[in-house]
Image: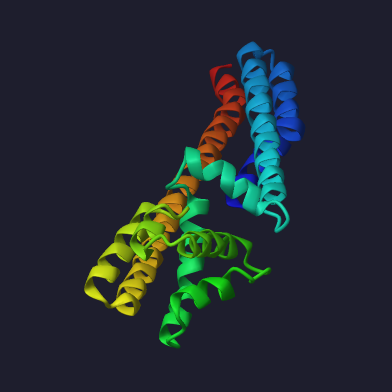
Amino acid sequence: MLFAGMLIGVWVFNQYVLPNMISLMAGFQIEGGSYVLIQRIIQYVSAGGIIALFLIVLMTVYSLQKSRIVSTYRRIYPMKPQSLLVQYASAEFVRFYLECERRKVPTIEAMKIIGTLKEKPLAAYIAAGLDHNLNEGISMKEAVTSASVEKALIRFFRIALYASDCTDMLEGYLEMVHVRTLNRIKRLSAAIQLVSYSAVGLVLIFVYQVLMMPMSMLQNI
């Protein structure tokens, strides 16, 4: 929202405020060709940013609808198995599987239960894949290795199977996911704030220079 607000604010300034300032400069017989060029650059950059942001949001909302999110997941996983969507789906699956473990539900039965969760299609998709492999006679270790989850979860599952302490390991995985998510949010927020505040600062410097130019000319008269 901060980034979108910055883009919209810069576009509004460029469309309605900057032209009046350039006209003011023309009234003082100041050459404003370079400022007209800057205005066009700001117009293209801000308008392009708004359009790109709108398309990204639109495509994301379309792709992540419940009726399409599994097909989106299938396309993304082979290309980017460590993507944000894969990490989110892995953590979501673990939350449900961990509850089954705490209640001593057998693994195969737990996979069947999670696989029927229509409100959580990604967790259901992962569970259905594991359930299929287990029914084919594949061991849990091999089934987890070939599951459509992030590599970190596969490593946690392997250690859990060797240590025979699945609950504690999965709790540790969820704690890792929590810390990783917080760090990612902090980095993303810092980057967005840096870009947004820098853009606003450049606009303010530009406005100050334009406003002070007629005053400088008056002082030289």
